[in-house]
Length: 256
Image 1 (tube, rainbow, N blue to C red):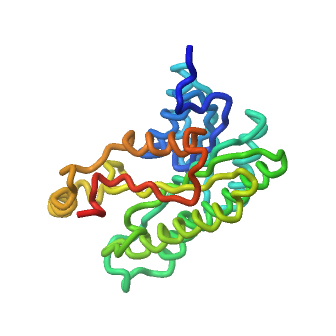
Image 2 (image 1 turned 90 degrees about the vertical axis):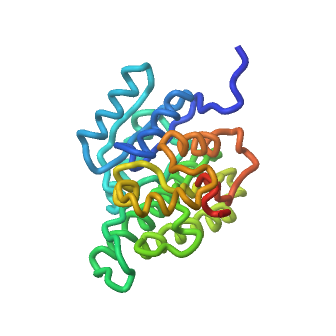
Image 3 (image 1 turned 180 degrees about the horizontal axis):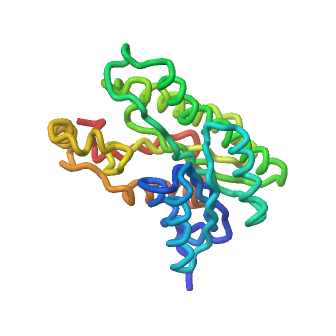
C-alpha cells in the first residue's frame, strides 16, 4: 500500500490543551495519522478520557496533566514524552486562556498576567524545551502554534487575548528564522470562530454570532476538526518546505 502524503507514522507529538475542543480534535487526528500522542491539559479526568478514547481505537496516547504556565510542569511534560516514546518530533502549542471579556481598559492585573502566562510564556517555555531535545539528537521537527485571527487585527472585548496571540505569531516567525538551520520548522494556525467551550461566550451569544457569521463568506463558524486538518498538514512532512507562516482558517472572515 502506498504511504499517504500526509501522515505522522513513527512520530511522537505533544499537544497541549488536549482535553477538549481544538486540542482534542488534533489529538485524534494525529493518532489516526499514526503518531504517538502525548496529551497535556490541567484537568486530569477530561485529559485521561481523551487518551482512553484514542487507545481504545488502537492509537498510542499518554495523558500528562500539565499547567503550561508553570515551567516545572513544562519540563516534566517533555521528559514524560521522551520516557514513554523515546523522542518528540512534533509540538502543538494549543493551550490558551482568556479569563476576561470586556473593554481592555478595565482588565485587572491578575487576568492580564494569567493570559500572558499561559498563552505566551507557556508556549515559549515548551518550545525551548522541545527544541533543546531535538537539537540534542540532531533531529528535524515541527512546531505548530495555535493562535487566532484576534492576533491579526484589533480584538474588541478580547484585547489582551489578542495581544497574546499577536505575540505568539511574532514568536513563530522569529523561532522559524533562528531554527531553520536545524531543520526545525515553526508555523502557526490562526482560526476564526470555532465552536468550543472556550469560545462559548461568543458562539452562544446570538448577536455576536450573527455579526461574525454575517461577515464570513462561508456563512458559519467552524468545528474543531476543521482546525485539526491544518495542524496535521503543518506537523507532517507534506509541509516540509513551509516555515514561519500563519495558516488562516476562518471561513474567509479576514478577507470580508
